[in-house]
Image 1 (cartoon, rainbow, N blue to C red):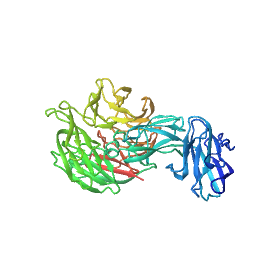
Image 2: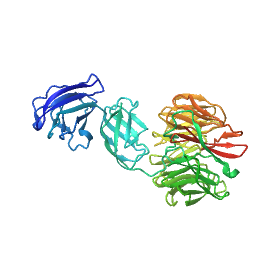
Image 3: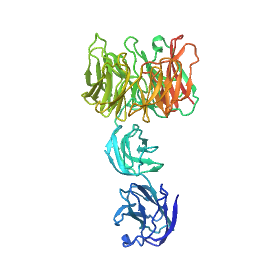
Image 4: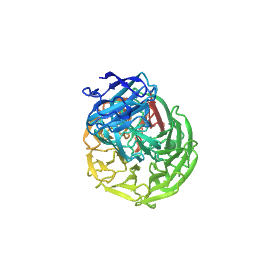
Amino acid sequence: MKKIIGLILGIGIGISFVTIVWAGLDTQLGVDLSASSGNVPYNQSQWYRYNAEAGKGYCITVTPLTGNPNLYLLDPGFARVGYSTNSGLTKDQIWYGRSSAGIMHLGIFGAYNPSSNYTVSVITSPYISSISPTSGTVNTLVTINGYGFGATQGTSYVMVGAVKATSYTLWSNTQIKAYVPSGITSGTLKATVYVNSRTSNGLNFVANVVISSDGAMYRYDLGRTGNYPNGPTTFPLNLKWSYNFIDDVQTSIVRNAPTIVNNVLYIGGNNKLYAFDVTTGSVKWSYVGNRSTCQFYSSSAVVGNIIYIGGWNAFYAFDAVTGLLKWKYDVKGYCTSPIVYNGIVYFGCQSLLIDPNSIFYALDANTGALKWVYNFRPGASFSTPTIFNGMVYFVVSPEIYALDVNNGAVKWIYSMPEQKSNDTPVVSNGILYLSTIDIVWGDMLYALDANTGTLKWRYSAVSIDTPAVANGLLYFKGNTYIGALDVNTGVERWQSGYLGQGGSICTISSGLLYIVQQYKMLVLDANTGIEKWSYTPVETGAYFESGKESAPVVYSGKVYFLGYNTQTRQGKLYCFGQ
């Protein structure tokens, strides 16, 4: 409830009416309107005061700006702690946060030809006193100190520039620890805190954005979380367009997830690489390679105007606009889906037993020049790599490797007794998640400290696929059900049975979970597991593709996924939306 009181205050030249407005969030707080005594600083004829409470942040403003008024704030001992002149804040604001209670003094000074009425507002708001570090890249863990953040996060959040942070390790009334979100731009940005629609002051954070495939790659981000923005929010969905891969039997088998960026969808199928217009489904360009030597088995990654994709016995970089080959790096064996970070593209290559070693590669993303390699035994099979906090993670069963992204030095190795997995590691909030399969010891989902490789917890289920992570939950498809676990403890939150055989791995977007079963596209409420919508193909012989890296992809309010027809022997790409 606002408390508005009119006061008469002499300011500079002339007499002006000043209204003090208390707009505190707590109704028991108020402004002590008695005059300050014993001190008349800056030729001010009168100061007024309010009682500041411990642990609160305050925003104080003066309006209108007629006559260029300056707002001054003094502490209980009349030491000036803030003023609006040259403060760098808009609308003559002063932000102030206290660690202890006390009577604060405020007033207007120096107005020339002042307004007949000024309004001074005192509003409880979150306040940032410091931020550390003051610079960094995406996924940098930042500590924000201050007041008035609230004991729990609830709906509150941190903004870095124009992008909302989504990953937090701590939220208390005086301190927040959050990871710098993807999507920020390079330069000096303001870090701000939003609590109950109230905005804090902003402190500078210098963002050194590393050029990477973040947001335009398999499983969307560098952590491979499968958490996509801007998914559909209303149902049912309608078929917007579809495309049949009809060229020949070889080309029609498409099993990898598409990559979408700048309204273009990229997908490879055996010896062909396609670029589709996401609005119309028309083919913008396609690259056709030699069927015996050029086979695109991986999903792609896109950075700038270059698309990176692995094949059989070679790794490729194409111009994303024209489809022209930029460079090719010859290897021996099958390449994993790539990841690009700080100008380097990373991927593993599984050789045949008769070939030389299986090798994990780091190549210059612009030229294809070799940066470093890590060798394994012939025939060793790699998972798709993941990057977090300067480390690249991948699996060569039965071990998980964490290597330095700059030189390939081993940071840590975690051995899984008798466990077998080539599933993609997923990293979120400093925790690495990996699903494994073992017919002797049972299938497991591991949660490790991503920085040290220390085991945090394990969860046992049957045939767990690569999980998706969002909003404190980890989502996965088991042999007979879809489940959600607490990311920190592994405790099951909900479980939902499903129909059909096979199925893709899970995708999460806008509070909804997407999963492709063999004969059904299914959308579940991510908080409860309750079905929101489903689609079953009507064509005779049609089913949905459930290859190892086949997964729904969400982009700008639409969902894209793959199918196959056993009678026509044609692959199919679907686009559903409103």
